Length: 79
Image (cartoon, rainbow, N blue to C red; front, side, top):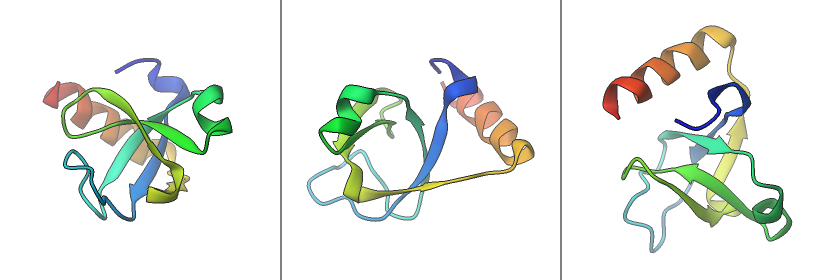
């Protein structure tokens, strides 16, 4: 995963037309100022790659460090 220390997390609220997203699943969000200006988020989806999705499909969540570490470990093992 690219730059894990700067990674945020978001929960998917909808996935209309996006087969690589699962509703109610937590996804890593990578920083991308240009995408944010265009109301998109750069998300590492089910394919394991990062793509742009509408920001309205997600809700950014703040996780405790322990939860972030657990998610990073899970993503590293899955990759």
